[in-house]
Length: 295
Image (cartoon, rainbow, N blue to C red; front, top):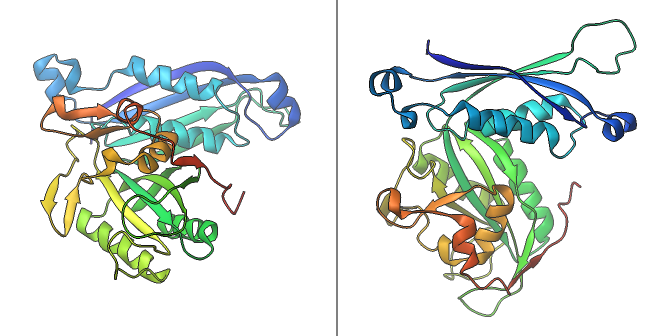
């Protein structure tokens, strides 16, 4: 794709690095962002909605530089790329992170990390378990999702402990949410989720009954974006028809993606922010859960 928007030299002070002095004192970071997208609609219409607001991208980059500390600038570049790819029009993003004050110990002019990432449909997957070693099961499920070809995991929420909703009497659940970018068709992705469930002993004998692992495809594509998929057939319901009623889904979803939106109706008017929907729900049955097994 030949068209591109280049945002060069976004500069701020951050505290990223392995050394204690880097985390304590901070240093200057510079970031270049190149976004590849089709700019012909913007050129023909002069409409901001047909392109990407680079002022918003710059603000997101500065927020990442000045935000929580990472050991590696590779990680800083990755989260910046994920932020840019939230813009559905962007096909590919190239991110260069410069660390000119890095403690190299020898004369140098700059240290750079270059990343190139391709956009895909943004998906939301809810995880749950209330049988067996629940924490290890969720950890293994995230590992399986991370290893799935065509799926790029972008964020994993903290684990929450939740009271069962509906169904027979059963043990407390552990729940979490994973956000990702998917090159897989929704039906293929759902088949892979069912395969991972089966690998962990999931059975479907009792509706809403206890289970070793539950993986629900909550949303496929950003609401209002051109990759969004909606479906109302028994085999595939998108977005998930009850997600907006479930605090045990929305609480970890908001943790994984504080800017998340979901579709509740037709058109732009039917798109709501997750935090606004969650504000109207009873969260008393959702509590902080254990830390991830690998932490």
